[in-house]
Amino acid sequence: MDNLIALVDLNDKVVGFDDKLEVHRKGLLHRAFSIIIFNTKGELLLQRRAMDKYHSAGLWTNTCCSHLPKGFEMEQFVHQRLIEEMGFDCQLSFVKTFHYRIDFRDGMIENELDHVYVGSFDSSPNPNPSEVSDWRWINWNELLEDIKAKPESYTYWFKFMLENHRDVFNKSF
Image (cartoon, rainbow, N blue to C red; front, top):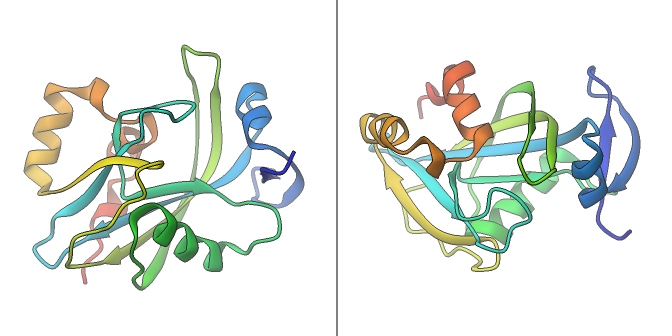
């Protein structure tokens, strides 16, 4: 059990730690984060999750997302994880926290308090292939058209953010 992540209550108070895979099997409420990166043209940086992820493999999603491991503070770890997944760092601003739950067909359950951060970056990322199989910059209208045409190509939490928390995409830099 060396992959311990923070379990929380609905007020985001840490109530314990458990193995990441077990947390998703049991559907325990846990702390997570999503990073949304824009360039100065207003395009959003998407990543396609690696094919060997334990759920949502090969799906397009926001720039970076993960869970808070034991022993780390959120403000520190979001930068570390952005570097580990996408190969760059930038200034990040906290926007909001929201709760969602989804039961996947494979038996995994996401039950997260998701902390959303946004940032700006104007170059090409250097993603870690064990985390990310592809990436692209996309403008807002193209994104909405693509999700409408191929909703199964996108992660649940990303679509949930777009449908229920669109304000996180209205950040200006």
